Amino acid sequence: MAFIQDTLISFRREMTPTLRSWYYIVFGILQPLLYLGLFVPLLTSVPTGTEGNPLQWFVPGMIVMLVLFTTVSCGWALTEELMSGSFERFLATPMSRPAILVGRSLKELAPLLVQAVIIIAVVAPFGLVLHLLPMLLGLVLLLIFGIGVASLSYALAIASKHDGGLFYMVSHSVALPLMLLGGVLLPMDLAPDWLYTASRFNPLTYLVEAERSLFTGAVFTQSVLYGALMAGVVALVGLLVGTLTIRRAGL
Amino acid sequence: MIRASNLTRTFKTKAGPVEAVRGLSLEVAEGELVAFLGPNGAGKSTSVRMLTSLLPPTSGQAMIGGHDVARNPVAVRQLIGYVGQGTGSGPYHRVRDELITQGRAYRMSYPDARKRADELLAILELEPQADRDCATLSGGQKRRLDVALGLMHTPRILFLDEPSTGLDPHSRANLWEHIIRLRRQTGMTIFLTTHYLDEADNMAERVMIMDHGKMIADDMPEKLKADLAGDQIRLRFRSEREAGSAAEQARNLPAARDIAREGNHLTLTVNKGESLLPGFICELHNSGVETQSANIHRPTLDDVFLSLTGRSLRETAEPPA
Image (cartoon, rainbow over all chains, first blue to last red; front, side, top):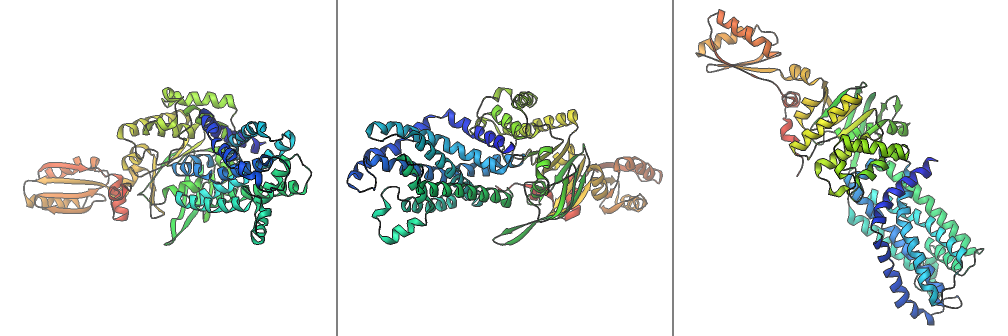
């Protein structure tokens, strides 16, 4: 299938230089490990709503945060290629537009998955109970969600064209409230009513809840269903918006 | 091979709509080498981007190799090679990798792409750079790589948007050497845009001059120069009186125009000056008028542009700093 083939071509092109500088991937887990080392201990006295080690509650949320922040800003990498002309070069080929976007998103997501696996492996001795299959499913959900967010980020980069500052401003003013309202750092159950209500309108909330359910090994729950639906919708909307932006902008 | 009818493109800007291309119609046959000449902002790139399916036209239609660009963009893309104004290669990617990726994007198998990449690396003299990051290439090497990228799938039509802009004269000459040789070998149709007069003049078999989003001339460079500019002849005589009588006789020359006397000099514009001049001097001699010196100024495409627009292309051709 042309779509899958094109996705692989695009992924492979972007991945090759990344693999050459693989140490960045390892370096990238430093920040999440700091959160785990310096923030999670604070959670021992916070009622997170789950039994046992707060790691079980915190790790999935943190991986969602990692994916969100990386994918939201990945359009930045495209700005350079938009200006130089190398993105245009691909648009002049018969490659499928959504496949170009998916391939590029996967390049951003692959290192994240590696980092997630490393984080899980590192914290397991400190009390994270492993539920391998559900956790794997959780990573797949993140992948789908990430493709959507990355595509939206690419669309934003294309729409704000040569204005890198605009891209930075918009992407960050979207990502931060999403993260805070998603209950990534502290449980939303502790929030005042208005804040809790606001969090219900945040798609990220459902993903975080689905991941938390999966990380405790519970697959067939309402949270997982909602989270999966949400990830699917974000991916579809992202690819649709991304493809339309490419077509409209007439790059 | 390339046909456009009434293409227009309007951009919305803060200052209001800008009509970048206003009703462009053209036809290019298989194997032609055509140059779009015009100052910056004339609408050349916008036109090429519409012809290559990168930019949807506001109105009008374009057909490439029998495919409607708007309805069947994928077929058009497969048929053409496109070398844009910018740098096609990615800075962190290696030269050979980029070529192979390009081949794969055009549905070539990996072994075919690999073979073709090595072929083009040799043809465009990029072999020593094959395993280097594209960011380390010189300007001329980057541009040759762009051309190689455009040629990966052996397209029947190659679009080159300002292929030599920003290159030093040596790299420009070198790039053109490669393009001309490739064309001789493959007979592909080449459509290029340029704001370099000499480039259009020396390389293209046919020049389309664009200004303010419209095509204002379309012919062989020689014919454009003969029809629209003509050869300027300047003669010197022994006296003003002789110059005056020469001016009288010059009126009988075919297509003579702009006849002017200035002291003992006479200037006039004719077509095919080099074949007219000896006869004219002889004729003057027979009537007792001796020519002391003769000089022909062959027209350039700039003279053509000047006569069409009243502006010189040289003034407008400087790229913005």
